[in-house]
Image (tube, rainbow, N blue to C red; front, side):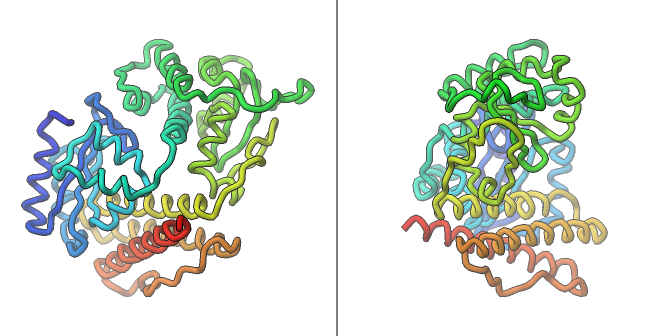
Length: 382
């Protein structure tokens, strides 16, 4: 549990601001995805308010409070969510809920445990594999980013030695992500030279290097064998993983990415060709995506700055683009006969409407799509 006073400051402020409509708060150190028992420079607070409370009504107060608490210039976050949206998000992200229970601060004990027990039940191995893939990307950035690794392992590493890669290798080994499948034929020469290569994929803008020696690949990243590719990888992003790790994470979280061909095979074994996904797995991935976009764009972005007409027009543009992405995902899944076409009661708001009214419609649309995806993902489990 957090021992510092900041969560209570947030809680008291929001209790006064939301009066009887305020429900409770959750807070943690570490990163957004990995609450940690190790105190860090990042502090994340989520306020869960009643479904009847108009979160747009407190934008000015929240933005002012963020500035007063120096959140506006730090990597810390303050998120405001209605109870239904928060419950939906944590049911779809039980690993985060469990870590907040273990390492975070809650003003109302028991709620997260109840939500988590009603949510997704899946292997922690897949979540760990996903975090370690993201950590590999962090370790390839100059300078190396250690926040996620420190939060996951409870370490306080600094980028002064080889210790970060050693800790990463130990964490990877503890998850038994070993070798899987035969080695690539010797006659096939990969376009990039890295230790024990198995396959290379491109996932959107990221290059994915699949290897039997991930730690050695990270250690040799600036080796002359990478030539000009090192800068390219650092600019666009690269992920390093073992074959089993790739398959475990893709099976649990990447069904849509694989099915919608967001992975492009470049070289080596076609590992992902062996995977198949149930309708339930695909719909759960779609629901997770919708819930994540709602928490990022409504729960956080809406409260980042003081209300300002010029900034709000840009914010509305960005919010509508995200809603279009959610709708496009629905159309693609409909074309694959995985999900029926969603028909929200409202369309994107007319530009002639006042900004406050446009934001109200957008907030409601995010919530409608969240309900739509979540309901279909739950129905597919029956």
